[in-house]
Length: 167
Image (cartoon, rainbow, N blue to C red; front, side):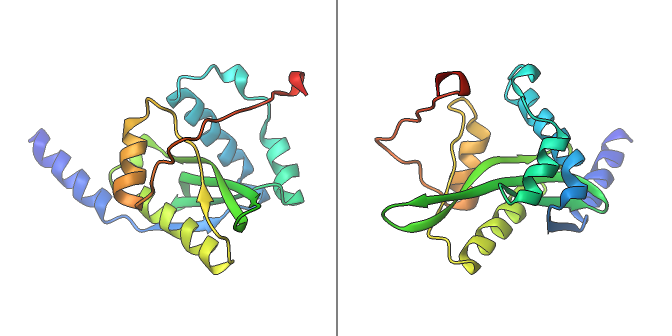
């Protein structure tokens, strides 16, 4: 009996209509919650998050970032959080800061739909490429990027950073 209920639940989940929408100021509380969930998934201490929903509201209004949201009805279930970058070789690019789908909504094709919408918008707006980094231990993400999205890992590149106290 339990297996039948599980099968029905899985079937119903697969029939969900997921929409993708650009985030607005009104979505920043939900975006912040996803950022916290992502930090927990990445095993990062929550005190490493130095912003809050109010910072997000100010910064989305100022155009510092964009975010596409995957919506299950009126519930936010995923995000593609990105901003502009520029390559001296190819011109304007987009940098994917965070990509996250809630665990309850994974393996339903939502990540692929969210990523395709992000890539389509980048292409329509004339961006030369999309870039992002992935944690070395996050094999599910690496598999997703390679097999579902068709991305390639760049050889020969290391990530470097100066934190605020080093500026």
